[in-house]
Length: 255
Image (cartoon, rainbow, N blue to C red; front, side):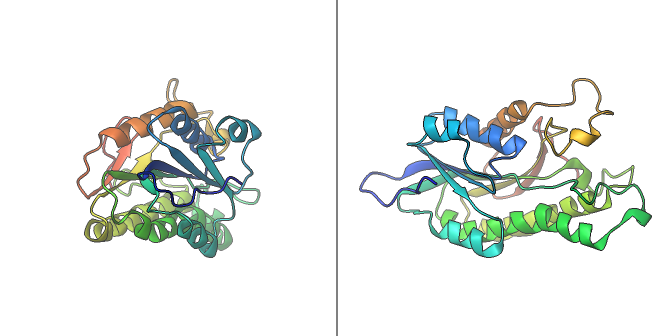
């Protein structure tokens, strides 16, 4: 693991953080941030080890932490971010789960499992808001910091006309409410920070792999395409202290 730099006499370094850096979208975002020259340091968090190719190529700019996403681990990581040396400008939180070894999206009420509901809510709603909790202290004096959290259109209550997918839909709806509530508090305590709930569209990753058969032509996006759209959106979204729920095309998604 590359250590996060200690305080130096130099001016604060522009920094970006990617949580879930080994996932399809997370890794694509990470690679784009490393390729750009706007960020002096890029912090990455994942349950998986850093790919050797990235460690070798970007050793001077990349700090990779391999850890679990439990509450204490999140807190310990955030405490190591030296805000006197690093200025967090972008934070991308990519945690999420749709299916697992023992569960898949439910087609009807009979398919519901309490255990699966807890697991999906933990990954899709609890973990992202714990990151917002711990990062608040780190970004409270930042200006122009944009934080994006992966949400989903199926988490829209107003847009739900098909039903099904109980755990995933409801966990993303819960995430949106948590983000809305956090954005109100961030506006008071970290007014220079903008929160975005981002719908990436159907992306060609392991998360969507079992469900790609019915995707219309041209609507299955590569992770790099989604990463490019997300980072461009963050560069242009108004810094108004409100939570925005936007899709890959920059269009609002109904709550």
